[in-house]
Length: 66
Image 1 (cartoon, rainbow, N blue to C red):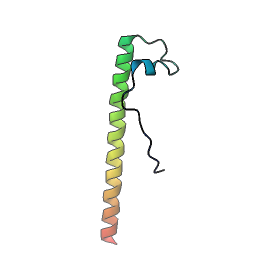
Image 2: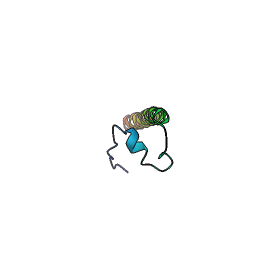
Image 3: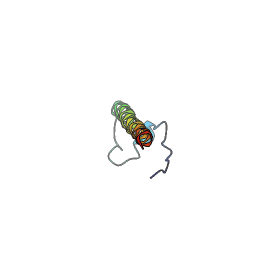
Image 4: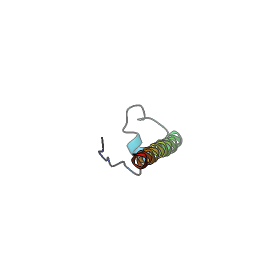
């Protein structure tokens, strides 16, 4: 589970159109979709980081208590 994956930093509009369901989006729709993807990714990373930090702090507390 500790696999690290490289996540593409800059998904372009043309690359977005290669995914099923996004082939025919207009430029305006595509830009809005990409913006939503970026915002959602930030939320997911933030949640993951908080959970990871909380787990590490809990582990530290358990070590001190032991």
